[in-house]
Image (cartoon, rainbow, N blue to C red; front, side, top):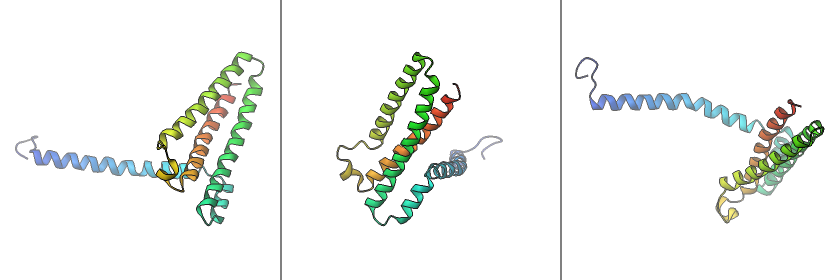
Length: 153
């Protein structure tokens, strides 16, 4: 310290570094919790299938089954929503438009996540599994949105 309340540049630098480290350490638990939450969204069926898988094609198949299972769940909730809104054709039209927009968003999000032209060459043998699991995760989030909308009817 040079004078009361005045720090030198090196002290300023150490203070900033210390604050960055503290921020980093505070952020780590949140990142770990988010990762844990995203992994915990996989079903018991997926986890059981994954345990039996011995090679990448089997892992890909497990992920595809998970995406298909979650998609079937979403379709069930979507049909419930459309059925509850059926008394107002305008509401049904808006729900269907929102669903089409969500499908476009999902597809664009996946494309932005994996933008390479030759996806197999760029992302390797895990690409199909990764896309299926991402699709399942996005669909699970959408199911929660549809269920929230369903509460309005």
